[in-house]
Length: 59
Image (cartoon, rainbow, N blue to C red; front, side, top):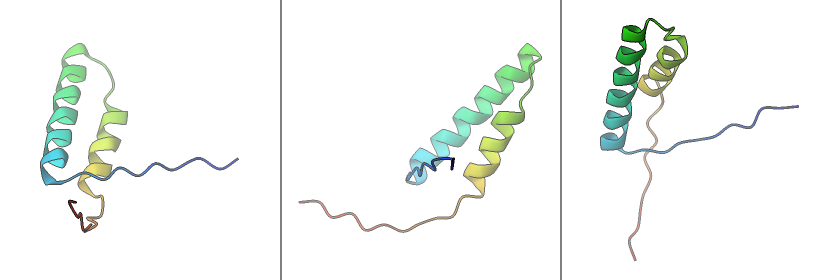
């Protein structure tokens, strides 16, 4: 069975907040002596994600 893909659309402020939160989580895991592989993968995906321009109309 195929895995379901989820797409997350965020603006520049949300992306920055997401990256800061992931780095904070990584630092906490390092302090606890736990593995950070999954958080590293997420950081890599967020940093290398393509930017998609979307037009938003307010009514």
